[in-house]
Image 1 (cartoon, rainbow, N blue to C red):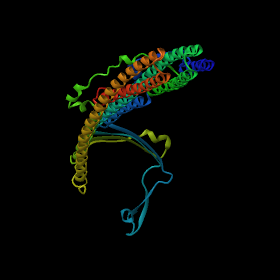
Image 2 (cartoon, one colour; image 1 turned 30 degrees about the vertical axis):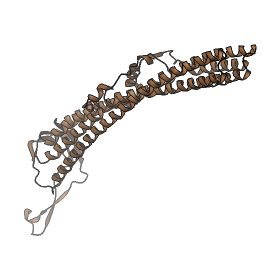
Image 3 (spheres, rainbow, N blue to C red; image 1 turned 60 degrees about the horizontal axis):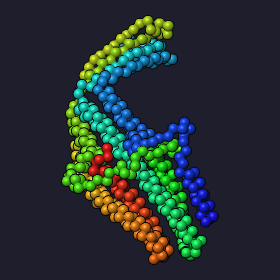
Image 4 (cartoon, rainbow, N blue to C red; image 1 turned 180 degrees about the vertical axis):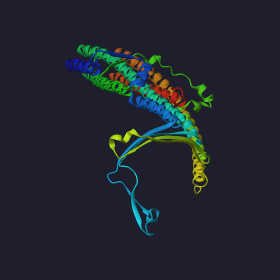
Length: 449
C-alpha cells in the first residue's frame, strides 16, 4: 500500500509538471478553436507568408511588363580631351602638290562634349501584347499557389488539433480507469485484511494499477508533445501557452452518402485549378511564338547638344544641336525555320499539359474514392470500438459483482480489466483514424478552402 501511495504521489508530480503549459513572458495565453488556429497560421506560418510575398512579387512583375509598353527614355553625356588630335592624310593634288604625295591635316578640336536624350515607344509588338496577358496569368498562378499553401496548412493544423483532442480523451479515460481501479484496490486490500481474499488478488490489481499509472505518464508526455506539434504547424512559438476551445463532441462525423452523387467535385480542388492555369500559360506561350511572324513598329526620337572648342573655358559657350524623330519597322522574313519549330514545340507543350490535366482529374477522383472508403471504414470501426468498449465496461462491472458475491474469481476481474484497457486503446485509435479520415475526405472533395 505504501508503494502504491508513493507511486501515485510521484506520478501526480510528474504529470503536473509535464502537462502544465508555460506561459510566455507577457503572460498571454491563447484559447483557440480550430478555426482560430487556422487563422493564426495564415498570418504566422512561414510557407504562407512566403506565398503571400510571391503574390506581391507577381504584382510587381505585371507592372514591370506593363512598363515595357511605356516610352523608354534615356539620357547620355560625354566629354573628350584629345591629348593628340587625330591626323588625316589628304592627297597632295588637292593643294597643288605632285601626285602621289600626301599632306597631313588635323581635323577637330581639343575638347569635345555632348549631352543628349533618346526615346523609344512601341507602337505594335505582338510579343508584348501576349506577354502582358501572360504576366496577369502568372499573377493568378501565384494567388492559386497561396491558396494551395493555405489548404495544406489548414489540413496540417486540423489534424494536429484533433490529435490533441484525442490525447485529452485518452487521458480522461485513463484517469477514469485509475479512479475505479484505485477504489477496487482499496476494497480488495480491506478484504485481504479481513481474510476473505488472498494476497495474490491484491497483487494482481497492484500490477494493473501501476501499468495504468505508467500509461498515464506516457500519455501526458505525448500530449505535451502534441501541443508543440500543433504550435509548430500554426507557426506559433512552442513556449507560448495554448488551450483548445473546441471539444470532441463539437466535431460532426456526418454521413457521406451525398458525396457519391457529386461527379464534378474535382473542379473544387486547387490542384485541378492550378493545372488549368498551367495550360493557359502554355497557350499564351504558343501565341507568343506565333506572334514572332508579325512585324514590329517603334517610334523613336533623339536630341543631342554638341560642344567643341580648343579652350576648355570656352567649351560650353557654343552649342551645335541635332535632333531627329523616326519610325522603325522590323519585318521578319526568314530565320532558318526557327520560328516554325518553336511554334511546333509550344503546340506539343500545350498537348502535354492537356494530357496532364486529364490524368490529374482521374487522380483526384481516385483520391476521393479512397478517402471515401477510408472514412466509411473508419466510422464503422469507431462505432464497433464504441460498442466493444461499452461491452467491456459491462463485463468488468458484472465480474466485480460476481467476485464480491463470492461466485467469481479475481482472475476473471483482472481479465475483464485488461479487456477494458485494450478496448479503450482501440477506441482511441479508432477515434483518431475516423477524425483524420474525415479531414482527408474534406480535402479530397475540395471542402477545405
